[in-house]
Length: 189
Length: 189
Image (cartoon, rainbow over all chains, first blue to last red; front, side, top):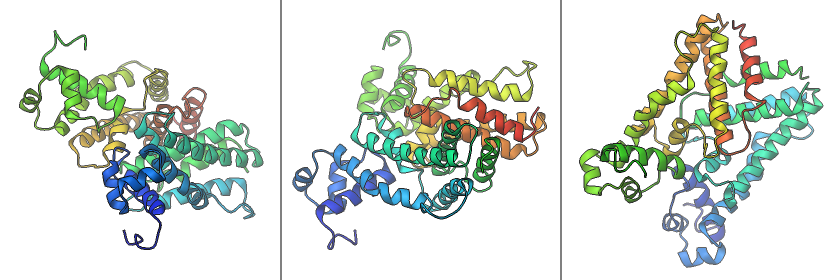
């Protein structure tokens, strides 16, 4: 890693965990993580209790950047409908990257198959916050059933993200009409 | 396994691969697969070229049962709209099982992260056939844009399946209203 000389062992481990688990899956070994980070196993276990805790911390560390990238600014004066559509525009933009494998917070939960795993818990909270954004906008926009609309939005988000991640389909020409139809049906402003 | 005594080594390996990769992920080792199947590694490699080929064969073997469970009978005299809704009723029913971890044909592609893997190719074909069913019904039902509707149906299917698999949400009260709204917007009969 080019940042190796500048960043701390902790930062390098977090970066390696984020990059390698996303690229190769949660089965990536401690040896591979330490090698990529240029950190000894002994140092790793001084910084993190376990590989599970390292993975959880790497997801947590990226959560605020993830949210910032997806969500519109708090005071952008756009309508709730436009603010929701903004999230899906961002998803479409992310999905266009050649190394996109789906939303990391969905993928890690699918791979771990254990809702009690520390990394699953972090990932779940991040997605619950996104659902919370949809719900708040749905209410502000006068949706007929804000709970249902929020569930539909995160369903479309995860479905589109998963399918783009496996290269089965792309959001273009699919997600905007789908979301618009659901917003219309909920009489969203 | 209780069927060990009755079934062939090949059948036991296919069953173990299907069960253990779904439960634990594609990283499951050859030793664990052979142990669960009660088959030696030597025998396994006589029957299958590699673990990858075993996994692909186990997905292939279950494909027709998967399709039969999800799809309505060919000549059930229901409307295209009802036939599509049938698939989502079946998904809701599957998602209620305690060991449900999402559609195995989606999960395996997410985990493998390699569209060229023999198991990914099998999985992709199974899901393309499901999309093909949606598309054919969309056309029969006079959908305004059958391609778009088919993409929307498989998007909702995969999104709902993934979210139920990680216990983030359940299809109940979510999938039927979502699909109905999309069918209505497409003027589906």
